Image (cartoon, rainbow, N blue to C red; front, side):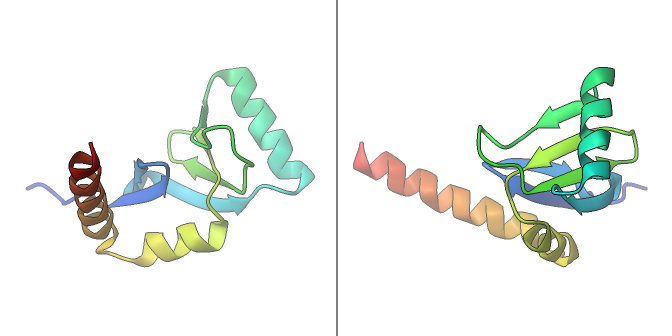
Length: 103
């Protein structure tokens, strides 16, 4: 029996599987920065900010650390929203249609 996977948009059309996320953290404190540096040293750091300021850090069950430029409150809201992926998918589809018309 397949359990449907819920996806969370973490910014710039990047998504993570919601069942793999253990914590969504703000990036400002020293312990969080240490966690980030340790993940970088272990090769388990994923940067999804596209060069923007890191606002939140997601911790996964595989001990990977994912950096996001989306605020933690916004990610938490997306995490609790079960229809999130459908909305993101509809938005990107409509954006692609608009983009194709302009070219």
